[in-house]
Image (cartoon, each protein chain N blue to C red):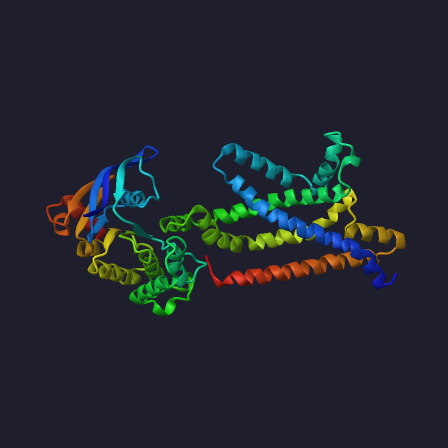
Length: 220
Length: 227
């Protein structure tokens, strides 16, 4: 099979991989921030619930979580699979990735927020900033600067984790590469897949490095 | 007219009674120095007076607004010097931008930092950072300015520049409450001095009264400080 054909064959999977990647980031980053607030809440029941949620998300394989989310409606609630939306498969992947990554991001954000010195809040309070103004004007950018290296790590892991969608038969790129490899009895599709993930992550690392450089104008 | 009236202030942390029934007033144009050993409650008193800590009982009445200069400056690291000064007046007080900018530049000139408005806090020395934080507090046009040991985080050779700024403010009749370890400075600059020990006001009066030879506790404290 020519390289052009191979890329053509894989391209629909690449699109799905990119969709999983971007949808996960778009939803899990803000959700992670909310979860981190819950994790730091003074309201003990909420804090405990969030702590258990994070612990389960981090303590069990994402692959298993995807299967539970996809098959759960049938096995737990006896919902007939044919009553579910036609692309529930894809939704399940997005839901699974989002709630899993939100848990990791929440812990990263918590660390970043807790590392901001109390004096920043006190200075803002004495100057009359509201709580929301304090967070969005004074605290948030400092937190982002603090957490960027850890977030980069997670985002790079996410690129590779997208391949886990194959367990519930969402045909992202890795699924196609596997099918092609066995159909053609060839390693080439795997190598092409590897190159794709590598280039993707190279771009991710490049962009994140640019972001870090952009925030180098100040030091905490 | 008194700008600040503190009455019967009490504060306990756990079973440590930090403030035991503190009362005093600060008049317009007055400089009040608060001195005393570590753990005497003077910082807690200042934190209660500026609402950073909530007293267990007693009242604090202001006739006007206040600002606070911290020991560790607490400048916003992601804001330039100018933005540190103008942000709260613009965002919180919603004042006119041109008026605020003029005021900020005038303050920076007064602090000897006219050429630093675009610098970021990490590029400044401790003394310069503290002068920016004084400018930031003054830009809000407070009626009273509180200082929480404004020179304690500075290298000894940098304390002079901050003390000079405070002396200049005193000369301009700025109402100030200054918690400090600098005995000579407290004596020179204050109209009234409070000497605190174990959560109570041990002595209160003019510097001459509080630092008088017959005031044994204060003399002993000064002797210990070698200052």
